[in-house]
Image (tube, rainbow, N blue to C red; front, side):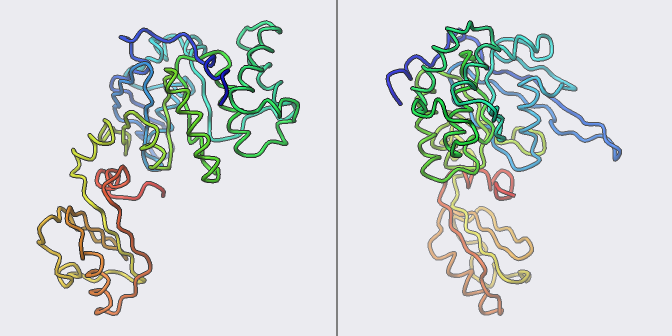
Length: 334
């Protein structure tokens, strides 16, 4: 990013005021099969300037939570404030203070790269000359200056994602919501986008991120909240969560057929020091331990003795991924 990136930021909230706050936030959907509680009382407190990650498996309630915070979904209980404004009491004021980037490409494909930025600036009340200046500023900052006259249809995936984020910043929002911003991007493009997000964060931009990439949350977020079944299971820094959940190494072995009862005992790992939990589910065994040496090999050998062929095996060192497994009992991607 260039020197112009220093001009990206907005006037922020007072440090004492939370950028995002929720109290017992709830959402229940009425369906033909009865009530569905998507969000069951979520409390969040995100200070101004923080990079906050919201993590959860599919159906956990994170999309509904973001929908309520961005005024697209009406809560059925509790309260929420974004940039100090009640999301139900004054949704228009909230919209003026937030930028939102969804998973989908919502660029106007009939416009050039620069026009996408200029039109969004005009929408937020900037005059023609000021909108042009803001567009040039963002094109330079996001490495898109040489593509200003290109049609949005001609952009690569990474360029389109950069333009979406730039467009969300035209009005200098207090809070930037990013829903799976790097989904579908190749690893190099993803890392390049991380650099842009770090610059925004360093400048003081408040960012709420949802992501399916645990390494992304670990690399970018000051704090994270893990939610499942519409509730916050844990929140804090990654190091805090590792300590609070035991920071075990998680060893998973999947076999080509169902695991027979007593396999862990046959492997000689039941009751071994350092093992906090052993789970058997269908064709897999998962072991949570602080002393992983030899466990994987013994599970493979015990399976072979019972005629079980290993389909897949993994050993995850203490990380945000193992925190998530410990809290929810399942892999993040489903």
